[in-house]
Length: 632
Ligand code: WTA
Image (cartoon, rainbow, N blue to C red; front, side, top):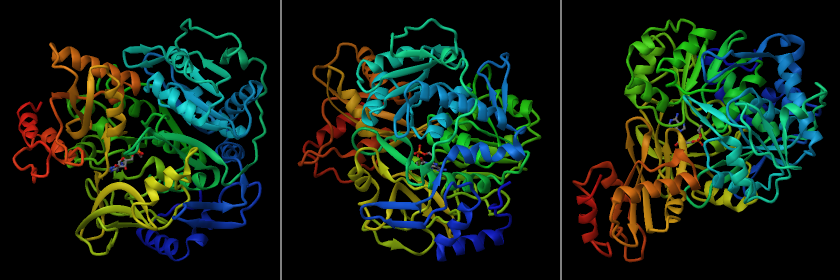
């Protein structure tokens, strides 16, 4: 394993201390464990005002040389990727580092053959099949910027992302398997491309063997293109601060923004955080259940594990198919040692029969992880007891698309663990809590807004095509700080517990949506005049989506109207953003200046109307009674 792994609590303390006193020396030493074509001149240049952040300036590298080539000598025959299909009866596939290197090079050559070059943006809309991993790495190999769009987003959502980044190519598949369902992916791409003019080529990977529409001159099959293509492709030399990828994520305003990560810093942070948090050992089989369409899949299914020379398992399916024991069956089948999943998956499995987990041995497991949303204590204990048999440290890892990698988390077997607490900042991470005025709260046993006061290599550099948006979203709320959008508590021992978003972002099953984004989709429905969306506690999803909707006329059948509104959201965003509850109202609680008082709506959605606070500033206080009476 890489020689930058912390092994004891004392080492953690020393590393942390050094990372604060001498951040450049600290990160410089870690970066030196990678392969660079040319060493950097300056370790860090930064200011949070513009913001302008550069790590390892002047360094030249290619991240795929670090993920693949550098392992060939010592780990060529080691497994890099294990792929388990949706259907347990279908055969799994394994790739050694040597084989993965060849696959990535071939895919890269296919990209080049079809006109892709350094700096191009390429949209990847693919299911969890090995070619998705090859595609991402192939882009990085040739210096093209990948923008992976989760294959559950709608055509409209994909088109918005393609247009924002002006992608010249789309990599996709004929269809996908999700549990018992098969979904026509290429059809969604075709629909999206009716709205996009920048895309010149579409490369289609066959998964289901379905006949699909192929547009002459634009669409090609991957299996045709790869015929006779070389298994070697020299890696493009990149600058540390060249873009590696764009990943769209929701904020509290407007459309999703393209979070930009760059080559050098992201690489260093992905491997360092991966190797340390999970304390990965050379022969471990590691499984992260996230889809590559999200940041967790980018950093901890693909880049982190490969940079560390580990064996990463990729799963096409869902936890409930063919039954609720599927995750545990896969753990036993491959002898998974480290398992990383989301609280929402745990909560949904808790609802099943306990024998679905108890009938598997799970002996191979050594470390468990959680990510994406606050894990409630009940879920934490169920996971720790029934999956980890109280033997495996369970690390609760807090981070964001914008942070590139894990920021606050216990380190397995190294730092203490407290249920439902992310606990400690990793070395190099300097979190602080501030009050509403932005003043730092230095004591313990407090609650505040979570900010970072110093950059780390994986930090967001910009939002694609709109730097001002990055500044406004993250660096302007509190001067000189990166603001996470989360609220957090710090206990008497200084351990952090993340409470959740304090902005208008809802976290549904670990997926972020802006309330404004969902409202915008709902408002597209022709019957709708106005809407307001809030989150509310949901047993499985963490947060559910509650929409208050004003219609043009009183609908004859509310259920029809609700179904139609849901349809509109599915069309504009995707099934993952479907409102759970839609309440038709005649008005919304607004202040005299026209601002919707979401605090009141949140209370109603939570079912807690006993104390709605001061409603005297409302334009029309009566509307609150009506909303209360009609609450779902
Ligand atoms: C939330 C996912 C509590 C948080 C990696 C954050 C968490 C948002 C945790 C980022 C955790 C993520 N405990 N909350 N362990 N992990 N979150 O960008 O609100 O999809 O701001 O990144 O998820 O979501 P994103």
